[in-house]
Length: 613
Ligand code: AHR
Image 1 (cartoon, helix red, strand yellow):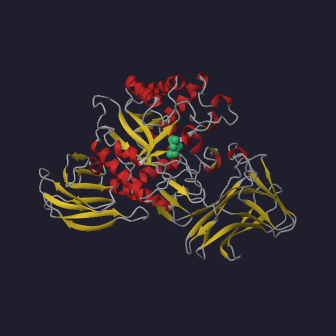
Image 2: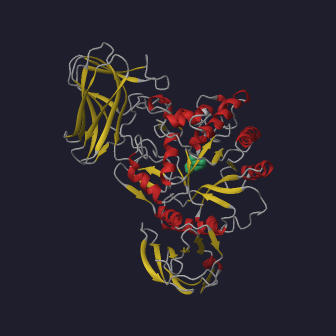
Image 3: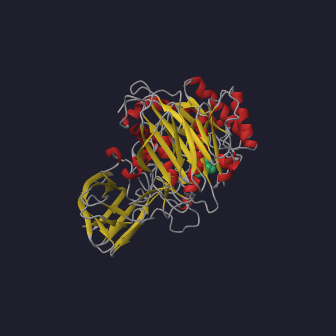
């Protein structure tokens, strides 16, 4: 049930999970990415330091039509440096290796040696290399830099001869990425995500998937293939997506951590909050013109072929194989739409896409959408459409107060079990005034997740939102994990997700947990869920106490089979202002045992069946 939802919001991708260290490596930042910021253009993050050299941007004869801008240096006298400040600096770790690469040409044919340095704030050179550009045509040059210090640096490229140089795709990548993948993911960030043990990852959004206006709809084909041929695009959260982290990398990451990929594609309509951005067809009610829907639907079918098609016999399977993955990715789920307004325009397009997928790939589990809230017109109309078409699953979204979650623990208990359509709770989080993540929000989520486990026959998938946020570049709060260039700072809510992910079961055991207090206001602040993991035979007891006082409970496990008397216990507890970490120990358990829930706590007790170590 428990998965993760990755959206490129809050600098989650470039400058975040995607390990590239150079910002605007392709000179494709565009003023339309961030209106009103006069520094947001092709030279963003770049500057020329020194004299007798000019730095301009050109678009004549680029590396690729999708990547039209590049830097031109005209060196009258060597000495000046083209500098890049990275994403809030370039964090190096001593002894580690970094792959430097650059596309370059010397139009006049006169070779030019480039000195490449990583320099800290005090002027110390913390790593360096050099390479000689000799080709009149675009050519990639590569070198490895070994960091001499753990330092926050910037990049300097210093031509050693006079003449014109054209430069593009200037990249610096740690070799030490997650699983050592080239063009890979930042290791520490990817690891905290993997530690949740998500059974699936939904990507690339959220609003990013359906985009701000028709021209901003995320097009998966623009995000695969050689990096220099990928098409960068404005990110509707007010910045730029290089697409270095594209569909191939998302699928690869899913495979690396054993999660099912859940790509989400626009249902032929852009985000319901679209501000058009010059595309008058793509405002709130706009849809892809019918004359273009055939091509759009073909793109979606092509994605399924790209993910699952034979490497030799299918066109898109071949493309996947050429990118380095001959084996199919075994895609099972595909999301169509993201909390859209359920208008006639939406319904018409969604139905066309749904029918086309069903016809060609009947085994595919299509995940539809029922608007941005847990009630209202879009929720009602979305569900009507789901019932009418027999959509296998719909994506529900709700960001709510602690009170809402407390009072709606029976939300899915009331669900009509005869319905064909299952639920994916794709976006949820507890929001309190000030929108901070704290133990109250985390325990509210733990409490609600217990109710979702109880309703696992209906709610097949869940994912908290949003996942990642870079400090200083955050558009949305709260998020599950904050980070900067060096640190990863999981919230208390993260540990709740991780404890649920690592202690998931596949069999729900009706629980017999008695409380010594019968007051309804007390009882709704206590939750329990008991599940069994059939692979290991472990029984997992989860207990949540959202009260500021200890509570006595009695856990009755009779009927679940013989168990060992010593169990692993993990407790997450603290005062509202704390940011506690889970603490593990062992405890004695029996068929029936008393347990005192600490104030403000989430306890997971993992019990092995008898005769197992
Ligand atoms: O999770 C942040 C945003 O919330 C998502 O992009 C969107 O789907 C929702 O409105």
